[in-house]
Image (tube, rainbow, N blue to C red):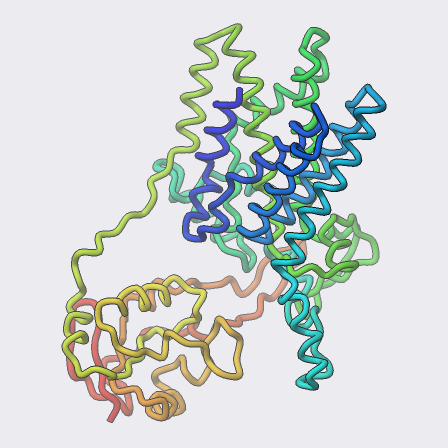
Amino acid sequence: AAIVGGVVYACAPYHFARSIQITLASIQWLPLGLWAWVWLSKSPSWKRAAVPAACSALIVLTTAYYGYLYAVASLVFWIGLWAAQTDKKTRDEFLRWSALATLGGAAVVLAWYLPLWYAPFASRAAGQNQSLSFQMQYGWPIKHLFVYCAKPWDYFLPSVHHPFFGNWAKAFAQSHLYGSNVIEQTLFLGYAVIGLAMSAILLGIRSKTIDSKVRLGIGLFAGLGLTSLWFSGPPFIPIGSFTIENDQILSKFALYFPSWWVHRLLNLPFRVYARFGLLVLLAAAALAGIAWTKLFQKNRPAALLLSAIMIFEYALVMPLRAIGETPPVYAWLKDQPPGTVIAEYPYVGSDRSIHAEYLFYQRIHGKPMINGGYEPNHAKSSPRPDSVDLMSEKTVRNLKGRGVRYVIVHRDLYKQMPRRPKQIEVFGVHYQVPQRHPEESLPPPPDKIPGLNKVQAFPEADVYQIS
């Protein structure tokens, strides 16, 4: 059961989708941390209490997000393990050493994140900005919690990299993002895994011969899955009529979820509650391992058939690229004088994949580029509007003032720019979507651009010099 659950957990699309973010790809410490609580409950002592404290350090020092997940998961496991204790002395010892383990983990959190929490107070003490606060620096508007919550279909939609369903899944996912991105919404559990997990829960409820330890395990993971599913939802679901004003849903009556209360009471700097889907996955994988093992003992062909289905559902064809060949435009740029400043178009925000492509090839040509930095007096991830449209005189003056000599225009990349819907339907109400990214509405510039002289033409790009 452990092997099957571990393989499911490690090979799930969630894990691969986060391979571009090494901290979020480090999902290995969470199950170890939960196991540490189980180990402590069996024979409470200071040596065993040090293990969950150490796991807290591993998780929090990897990413604060998983530290948040671990805190919620630990509470679920601790309540279940404490309630399962039949011996009063052992229960009291478990309570005492668990409290010390929690304090040890909290000390690590405080030591690591104290500079973050202290920064706003230090700024105010120095008189730099009297209105500066933790919420203003690190908090998120509640609308982000709606955007980056788990949608019901996320758990049932195959990965966009699935060899058979990928194209269909990508089309559906991109049309139902509502401002999020495919990576955060990749939470596919797999229908075989869901079926096995439900079977394990039914087994724990109905079977009278099941081992008490197995029953406890089923209860713990079922509680973890349901709690995590609850946490991964939106801040609230309106009940009855509601309106949308300035990106805010206004409703007189609503069904509230944990993220609403956490944001309202603590305003923690977390916005992607869809990542609680990792705990849903962990619970489903463990339950599936238990059910698969019971099935294997009774009907091996059926268990092997389910294994084949799980392999098929988790099959991925990850995008690969050859980096040995250098596009001619970058080979030409490499031979230009050192210090030649360039700008690449379409000019997009630093959170776009196209922007990452520009930086990727900077390792070849080695030239300074304005695409590499943030624009002053504007959102960190987005360029200023007067830097986006090459047909604007302001853009050319801006480029010239920043010392740009060459402008590289990738016309094919304009066609790859995402087109956000101008109107979406939220809970049955039509909503006009604000268009915050000006580059998305721009067509590729014509061959002749005012203020620029074409000096080179390559299959993948044209090079212009500022006149």
